[in-house]
Image (cartoon, one colour):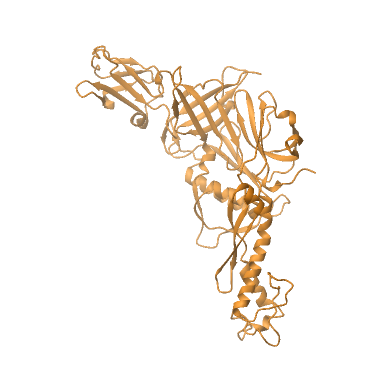
Length: 524
């Protein structure tokens, strides 16, 4: 297997969504560079270790002799012609024997050459008298928000744009002390995916009703507007090409998506995309979403229903280094339900639960909203031919009251449905209170009927398999379903979706999980 080389190029941040064009080239400690990529809410990331010999990434010390004005920097700093870089990241101090403190030197008292290799003082720093290093140059080579571009290549000595594997923004680095000097641990999160944690607004002064696919587009468009994706300005925009053709425009059967009323104020884009990808809003099962890169700065957002199973099969022999995990994520065993409003306008609520799951997994509660069953039932009663005349009507025949005006004659009022608590009973309401009680009971029954299958289906955690394979094997495809035949592990003939790939110098680590739509359903 050829050696995989990793180079990380760091570009300093000098404004909102803007970075210096010059960069620092970083070479991770061999075997520590890891790129993680995933679908849905998972944010891609890069991490690695860097040798921090003599603390070179953060500060350097020198001894003044009273005459020397030029000092060679042990570590080349970025081109510092940018004022924000000088003021925010580069500081110079000289030890004051009189006060026993470090005195910061004004930027006009020193300068850095264009190559970033030397510092020159306008007047020589004082003699340290061989007591200590009395010149301290402090700078943050790394800072939160800096841009990291990661290149990986093999079978060649240099890299180019086709080797770009990751673009992200740096998180706060961590330093760990080791016996041979300390190590800087850096981690960056994907630039594009992190932007979907922007809060968006989807509202208007008129009723806002859109099909599910258009809602997804509106969410992304608002992210673009706030973040400057695709712009040409180097000051405030992210000059990256972004493609939305991967968003499905029809359901898998070519019919249109359902419409939904939308009124969203300051909610995270990623949470909304997750919400509207559920079968509740697609009426076509769970939709998968994510961002794909062509490796040259162009990105494509996809939102689609991925069906079918790959011909590649994962068997017991593939699990030499594999861990089988069953977590409690995505369990739902109690649902609190809003079933609409009763005749008086009060909210109707109920709940469903999975007792066996609660006993095994502890309570995992979700809140759901059903259609306004109370209102629907009332309207059905008003329009029913058997009882329509028992509601008060105006001269034009319009019903003017929500309660029947007559319960007793010529016969007892007959509901369109029997008492949900006692379907065999012929008992019917005799007054407004009982009429409202019947409406509430039936609304609750319909809501429980709607949501009970959900707690039955999601009461157990999804199956998760972690598979480790050598990098000299063919890389599996992110987002695809694979047939997992692991009879000895009680996973016979199961379809799992590849949700995450972790790539290191020697191996791929795959995380495959059961799709929400496939819970407890095996391949036939």
